[in-house]
Length: 416
Image 1 (cartoon, rainbow, N blue to C red):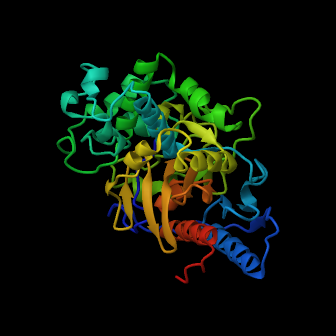
Image 2: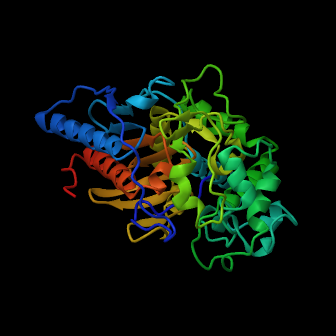
């Protein structure tokens, strides 16, 4: 589980400095639906242009999907030529959705609330006695909206070793949760918003305790199966699930280009990811990231995720009164963002959208929908730390996200 970064708000840890990545020639692989008007075609061309700018800034590959709710779906795919020998990126490829998993976890919790098997104000102690310090004062609502005070664990030694592939063990959910609860709390329960992957691992344990089923089974039986999300599953290893769409290959900068991150954290000079070297990058596809569990382990496609977002925001997964609870927010990541119960409210230049972002080594995902659920966008990239170390790549990716949202709303793309 990669640490939550403030990429969208333009803020990043002071320790992270600029790094220009080598820019490779691009291999444009595009699948674009015919659109119904000259204005639509113009917006599609602009969407293609900003995707190409992301590649020029150092993003290895990017998939963009836009559904405006009334016309053909627009898909744009761009990929740098240096990584095409390993895998030719396609619009229907699966991606590790990372923290987008949290929205599914929240939906499962709200389903059980709707069935009167859970209450949002239940304490963690009620369901996981003795597992979480101060659990008697932490509610499920606090876990869902990141106000529990449980610390983020992404930069603990074990998390870093798991994330980079140096630790190939299979930690239990309890062990992953302890990576956060063993740290001092970041605040009193309910005091402030502070992103916590371990908090969502705790929610997964609650779901399993209440239902007697694994998190993977719950996702399949309650979400993926009913919605026809055939290429969506909870990863249990690095290997793609048989019978699903191919897994996109993920890439991160090599150790030399990760030094702006490694040095401030006191990590060795040669700290980096395990995997085959490729043009100043490392292919991270074979690193097992399933330890993210109910915080970050779902694999899916842009089309499958659109099905989920549409069902979620239209009230198709749980009672609409609980959708109102989900969209009750607290201030979070910068002035343009607030956080509800497993969903991010983003006030984009072209309108307010709901969804989530996610980041794991080699994978970045941003999925959003309008309030009705009729219109959706996905921007999936084949790097994460490449965005952290390069402000240029980060800004270019954000431009793609905003362009996709504006295209979804049928509004002019931002000029800056």
